[in-house]
Image 1: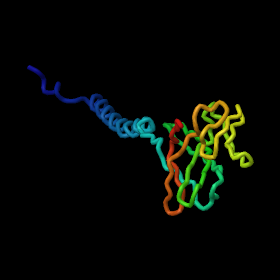
Image 2: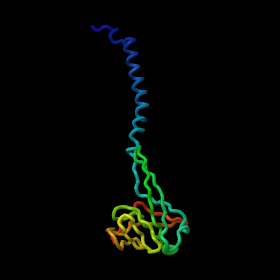
Image 3: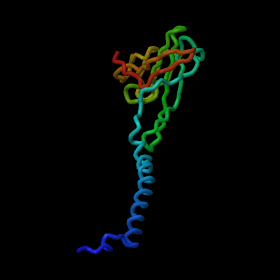
Image 4: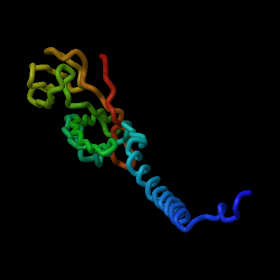
Length: 167
């Protein structure tokens, strides 16, 4: 017949059990938020599409492409990346605005506006684009990329990314 004292918990076993339970509870309370903190950047949804404010529309003159440069910072997990953009804002009329990328479609050099010849010119391989960004001479295979635009409360916005024009 089993002894009644066999079912009693010894002081040593009680301390072991209590220490294990308390340690497990503390580990869980600290561990779950710590694991969540460590993996949360990889679970964030990165949105590449965005409307960027280029400022007041009145700062851009009519009929002359104006270079506007900005930097956009994106966070991917623990990595922070800054991307520089350059765009030409062409205000054709009071309401009609077109915005072109300054990146040449040949080898991604930076094109610049030359008012004396009324062309965007890429210095790398002498690619020429007309005022509407259409390739007219040199090696560029297609026109300059163009951004969708909208005007709200007198401010000009462009939508990233630019779309690739084929003609």
